[in-house]
Length: 156
Image (cartoon, rainbow, N blue to C red; front, side, top):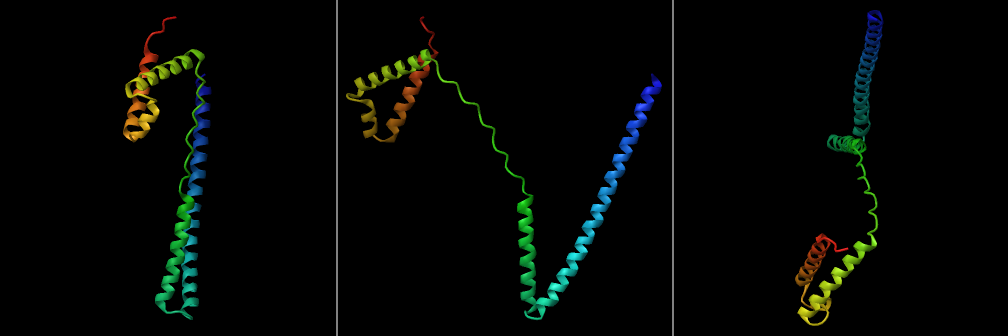
C-alpha cells in the first residue's frame, strides 16, 4: 500500500516538474519575443523619423510619430478592456391567483370609492387637477391600503 502511495506521489511530482518547466519555457520565450518586438519597433521608429524628416520639420515628425503611437496605444487599451457581463435575467413572476387578484381589485375599488366620497367626484380627476404631489400621495395611499388589505387574514 505504501509503495502505491509513493508511486502516485512520484508521478504527481514528475507532472508538477514538467508543468513548471513548460511554464518557465513559455515565460522565457515570451519575454525574449517581447524584447525583440521592442527592438524592432525602435528601428521602425528610427526609419520613420528619417523618412519623415526629409519632408517635415523635426517637431512635426515628433508630433506625427507621437500621435501614431498614442492612437495605437488607445486602440490596444480599448481592445484589452474587459467586456461587461450582462446581468442575469430574473425569471418571470407567476401570474397572481384569482383570489389575490380579486382581493386587490376589491381593495382598490373600495379605496377609490373612499377617495371619491372625500373629494367629491372621481378621485383620479381631482388628483390630476391638483398637480403631481397629490397624485403621488394618492398612489401611495392606494398602495398602502392594498398592502394592508392583503396582510389581513382571510375570512374564508
